[in-house]
Length: 109
Image (tube, rainbow, N blue to C red):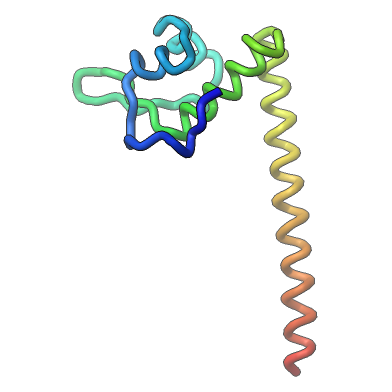
C-alpha cells in the first residue's frame, strides 16, 4: 500500500495515480464517477489533478474492492459506515473535551 505521508507533491496526474495502484487510468476515472469523495481538480486543459487526500480515498477504495473483494455497492456502504463512525468518534471527543473544559473552569473559580 501507498504511504500517503510520503507523497511530496501537491497534485498528481491521473497517470501517476494509476501507476501507484498498478491500474488503468480508466478505472480511476470510473471510480471518480462512482465515489464522490474522489474529487480531483482540473486544470485549464481539463487534466485531472489528484491531491494526497484524493489519493488516500482511492487507496481506501482500492483496498475494499481489489484486496477485500467487495463490490462497488459494498465498498460504498463500507465507506459510508466508516464516515458515520468517524463522526461519532468526533462527537464523542467534542463532548469529552467540553466536559473537561467545564471541570477546569469550575476548578479555576
